[in-house]
Image 1 (cartoon, rainbow, N blue to C red):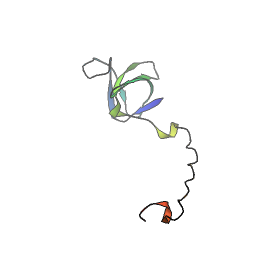
Image 2: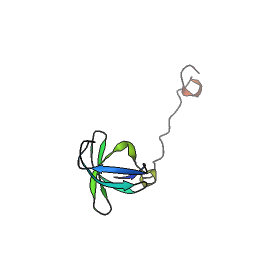
Image 3: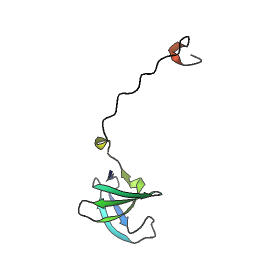
Image 4: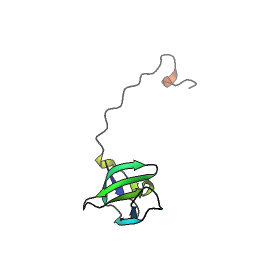
Length: 88
């Protein structure tokens, strides 16, 4: 799993809460490898090997990295119901 920093900069901490000391800072749009998740915190590794915990609100997955969606299943309408939806 990878995430991207959405804040202008993000403090990475030694543990999964704001009470832990800051170990490093990363910048907007930097890619980070996800190592673990705990509550609202995500443990990540930077490309240069630095690791730390960041708040998930400031990280996002990039949909371009996700596998292509599969074809949605075909849903058949129920006979006698307009459009297959009751009450319409």
